[in-house]
Image (cartoon, rainbow over all chains, first blue to last red; front, side, top):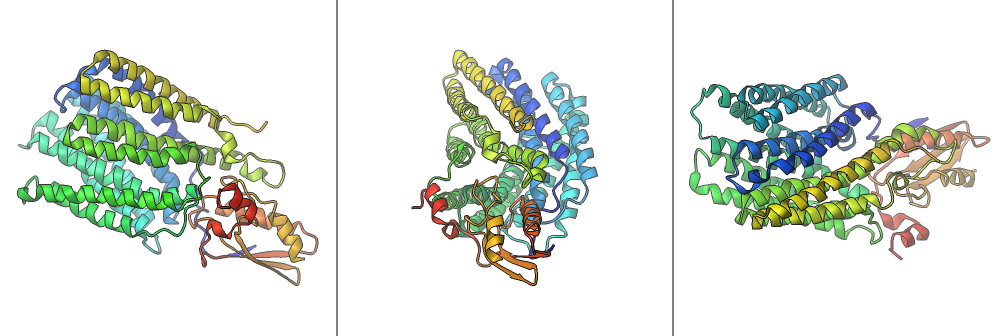
Length: 410
Length: 97
């Protein structure tokens, strides 16, 4: 057979590589929802504390970034049309990263600065392995488009963000630089959350949203504006901690404009999709953006509620939705694709439980709403009810993923 | 002979969308010349994660037709696919009709 034309996906990474990242992320996700019961005070006190740092790093490093690294290794060949430079590096990165996460979150939990510093070193090494692996893969890109530009920028921002985090970790132990810790934490969070996580989401959304929703013929001018304002805003905002302090609100407005243009882009994609093209994950993908809007609005009121809605809301719902799409595909590809034409194979939609994913999303949104209310009202009782609901949601999420991974044709 | 190729291609279903590639309008042209099937087709997106698998299925299925010795596939994204290219059955399923 001869094939003329581009073919994006002859470079699929090994199934078990992606699976390691995804399974570890779900374990950390459940640990988070068990640990959260004991940390009520972390949410009602001053936002910079070991308690909140423990929960934030457990959630962001253990769940969000773990999923993202797995998803990136799966999506680099799909979205950039290049093979991954080295899967061996990706395997090593996983183990070093896993060790770093465990050391760091245990360090924050026990307020043990040695463990935080060693964990930070492990994380620094493992994330730089990812960055090098990504950049060496990206150097083979023939044609840079908005997706590859977003992802490459996100990875560079990750490098800066993790370097600042590494400095903070070492400084906790050795105190070798005289720094304003609050500024450093803001810079670290800015590069990691806005620079890496949000930029990656924006780039990957431009591949996945149209792919899953079958939306076509939409303009991509808003996402280009989003990129321009995002880069200018983030770099200017970070620099304004040292120079041009008076311009900080302007750069911050640029970051908000970047999010606004991203939301306009999502709306255009949503508008261009066929009416009936809506399953549970697609609904969750689009609905997660409402949580993004709410979280940004909450910046005016409380950083803590902003963080809750951003991490446990927007990022999490986007992850649920994408996991409900990506994991069935990976399992199907691994288990059934070679049987096509020889016997009847399931459709991807058949591989998810029928009702439980939707029930999980509903439970999580109710839990999240009560959680925000509990922080707002400082109500311990509501806090525990919310945690309980979200813990059940976490187990349902894990059940759904295990169901897909164990799926066998009847 | 072209009809036989189309018939075989109708058995190839996109597992994400749930419809076959002919009904979806992904096959732009089929010609058979001296036992060689020349297929011009597209994908629902250039980033389609099962592109390689779909092409493999096509080769396998078309080569099973008596009289077909080889298969050439020209993958093109010009014009880019959109749901309007699908047949009425698909459009109806997606609420477009």
